[in-house]
Length: 79
Ligand code: F3S
Image 1: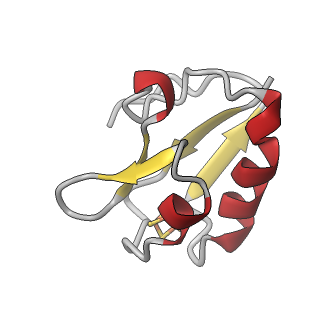
Image 2: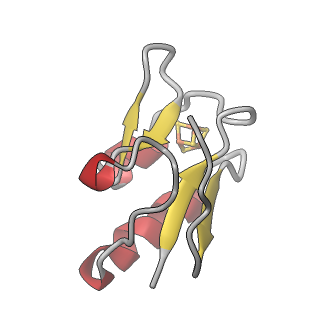
C-alpha cells in the first residue's frame, strides 16, 4: 500500500503535482498543495490505489522542493 502527504511548510505552490496527478493533489486557498484523494484532506491516511502509483511517483519526482512524501504506512498528519 502507498500513502502520500504534502509538506506544506516547504511547498512553494509551484503547481506541478496537481498537473501531474490531479486525482491525488489539489491546492488550498494559498495555492499550497494537499492530498485530496478520497477526501483525505492531506492527512496522508488514504490508501492510494495501485493504478495511480505511476502518477504518484511522477508527482513526487517532479516536485522541486521534495514536499511530496510517500510511504508504505499512513502518515496521520493534519493539514
Ligand atoms: Fe508544492 Fe511541490 Fe506540488 S512545490 S505545488 S508540492 S510539486
